[in-house]
Every structure is written in structure tokens, then in C-alpha cells.
Length: 499
Image (cartoon, rainbow, N blue to C red; front, side, top):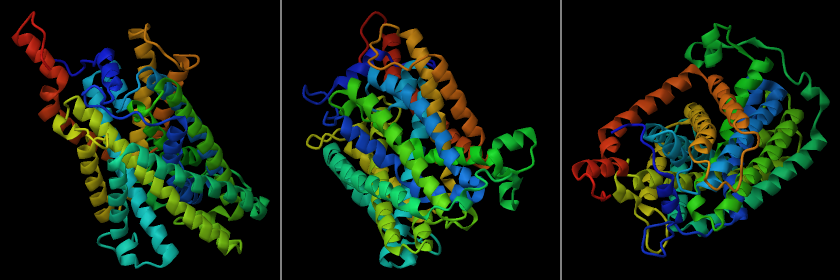
């Protein structure tokens, strides 16, 4: 048995076609293009605007953080084109995990599936703690139970994860309704931030747009420096164009949510049409909003004076518009709520796909007969995220979300030309233009951003991958569906294998 065995495309399509109507376990098709954009924007518009803008402007890029968001948006768009081709051709749960299984082999699929679980779990937990902090600041709750510092357990973060976990388990249609409502609120507030903030922008705050590079502080050297600096022996530095690239690698965290759309392929009414619309619509709207909001923030306040915890709200307070700061805080709560919800939904679908293939116990992939959701794996993921959010201060691990997403995007980009070569006959409602050039550029761009993350982030990422390898070789390698099919064929040559 080979770790590079691939899952037949016909199996992927057959699983994706199941909707529960013929007795086979399957997810319910209830989503349209607008629902998909709602999920995508619900995941993307959140932490990037309300937190990362200030942190990266102050510490790495200055006003050039606007360029960082633009660069990250272009790289995300390239990856989204690749996702759109694969998602429309092979609409399935699991997205990058399933694409890798069908093109590059089982071990690569497991690595990316394990990687995606890390990405969404940590991302949801980090955002839940941010949600709790914004709520505490808005209504004056005790920081001992809702704050980031000085608390033993963050009850607010645990509570919101458990509540939204129930919504995710009860049904995809209910999740879509809640997400769409939250998306309307936060998109409206983002437009308000841009329009109202323009009246307070000062040209002096935008000059120099890319501050000159300067030596990094003591916290930016050693394993905390970007891999590129460590490899080439460069003096650790911040700002300058290198700082813009470092910030781009970090704020890429803000764009990672669009891949959650690709995980909903089996729950989309017309996946071949609606998945490309959902993916590209999400990226287009989100990138415009990110660039507009980041430009306003660095234009309202000198980048060295930005409040890292609540950059937008504090910028309006500094401008004497406290009422606007309150609106921003409310939007932040709505925005972060939808990020957590979509993250929990996406994790459930990834876990469902992995479990259905037998790489983890298949029993936990069971579909609820009434709700039509993978309720067991969704419940397990919800409890895990709640524990992470409640007991671990995860801000230092946020970069793991970026490296996990970038790793997935590299593999998805590579999968496009591989699948075209192996299955030229496969119907492709959407095609990446100028393939294989665009997929190759996408993969290289994602890899370059990965190398601009810190050595420390890479060490943590590799440790997680090592743990995943232990689980794969200890269980999944011999227990999965393809392995059992091969074993049955070997035991009874010439007879059809039962799976």
C-alpha cells in the first residue's frame, strides 16, 4: 500500500452527489450564491479589519499596511481562482483536503486536512477571545472572566463558541441566516468607517507612506525573525518594503476565510455556477473593504500612536467622535461572531470529509437525520475550540492560521495543472485563465509569503504536522477506505472488493 494512492474522481463526485434523498448519508443542498458570499464575507471580514490593521501598521509597515492588504488580496485572489476551478469541477466537502486526495496522494491530503483543522480551530479560538474582549469593553464586564490578561478562564470566549456551535449543528440554513444578518451589519459599518473616516484623514499621517527600514527590537530577532532574514543572514529589521511583506504575510490571516466557501460544495444547490461566484465575490468585496478601512485608519492616527487592541474605535475616539467608536465596537462584535460561526461550520465539513474517507473513525461522520449536518464531528470540534478559547491565550499563535492557509493554497494551486493533466475530460464550468502560469505564480507567491513568517511559527507548524503524522501512520494509513479496498482485493483477487 502506498501513501501516494489517490482517491478516484468518480468516488469524489459520487459522494458529493449524495443528498440523503436515496438513503445514502449526505449533506443537504440548501445554499445559493448569495448564501456562499455571506459565509465567505462573514469569515473574511473580522479580525483583519478590527485588529490586525493596527498591529501591523504600528509594528511592521506603517501606512504601507495598505499595500500589505493589497498584496495579500492579490495572492488570495490567485488562490481563489484555483479554488474556483476545482470547486466547480469537483464540488465536495473538505475542499483542499479532497482536491489533494484526488491529485497528489493520500499523505498529502492528510497533511492538508490536518493543517486545515489547525487553521480553523486556532482561528476560531483567537477570534472568540477577541470577541469576549470587545464585549467586555463595550458593556463593562469583568476582565477576570472576559479579558485577555490576568484571567484564568475566559468564560465569554467559551460561551460564544458553545452557543454558535449549537447553531452550526442544528442546520446549515439556520447558520446561513444568522451569518447573512451579521454580514449586513458589519459591511454597512465598514462602509460607514470609510466614508466617515475620510473627514478625519490627515495627509501628514500618510507620509512617508512606507517608512524607512530600521533595526528591529529585541523581540524581533532569533526565532522571532522572518525565515527570509534568517536564511540570508540579514539584519532583523522592521518597516521598509520588507516590513510591508512581513505585514502582508501576517494580514493574510484576514483573507483565509474564503476557503470556507469551498467546503460547502455538497450543500450548494447549483455548485458549478455558485461556487465560483461565491469565492470570487467574497474576495472582491473583502479586498476593497480592507484597503479602504486600513487607509482610513492610518490616515486618522499617526501609525506609531495606533491602539493595537482596538485600532478603529480608538482612532475615532482620538478624533472626538466617540459615538462612532461605539458603532465600530458593535460592528466588531457582529463581525467576530460571524467569523467564529463560519469557522465552526467549516471545521465540521473538513472533519466530515476526513472521517468519511476513514482516515479518522468513520462513526464520527454520521449525518443527523433531521438537521442534515455532521453533528458528531461538529460537536467534537465545538468543544475543542471552546476549551482552547477558554484556557489558552492564543494571540501568539495567530500566525499559525496564516501559515496553515498558505500551505493549503500552495497545494490547491499545484493541484489545478495536475488534475488537468490526469483528467482532461473532466467538465470544468470555471477555468483558471492562463494555466499553468497562474497556478504556478499563485503557488510561488503563497510560498514566498510563508517564508516571511517567523522561524518560531514554522517550528510550531512542523510540530503540529509531526503530531498529525503519528495519527496517520498509527490509524489512518491502514484503516481508511482505500486501504481496506486494497486489502480486500488482495485477499480475494478477481472478486469485487467490499468497502
